[in-house]
Image (tube, rainbow, N blue to C red; front, side, top):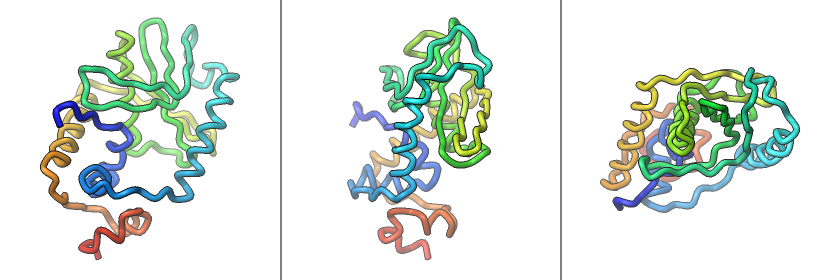
Length: 193
């Protein structure tokens, strides 16, 4: 399993509840796609088309190149993923994570964004210290400042996830009722209630 690379979307799942990753990666239980996931996928397709016609004004950036649905992987990292939008400037890279609903980035959204930025930084050889979370329903663009300690946290979380997968043990879950009732794996997690 030394060549295993973690999909970045599993980082977000792990922060929601570590057991989701356990069920997907250790037990290989297929995940059902709830309505909100299908809604988000359709939205991402529409956004990709719209971004081709947009300027970088909402990001307060000039002289940069914007790309959508960017596949990212680098040999220095044990994770990979598909970044919604990547802006490459003269000296910096700026990943953009698009979310349909919300107005304040969650920790998992920030960590996911930082992981994309770390890969982009390594691939392009440009500085990564800021990204953006875009909430489309309310038109809000939230800049996320990134520090070296944020990047270290991503590495720490990825190491924890890979270790959990290697050990193959059911992890503890501190998920609350709100999370559990919207989880696709509730039927497999009968010790929660």
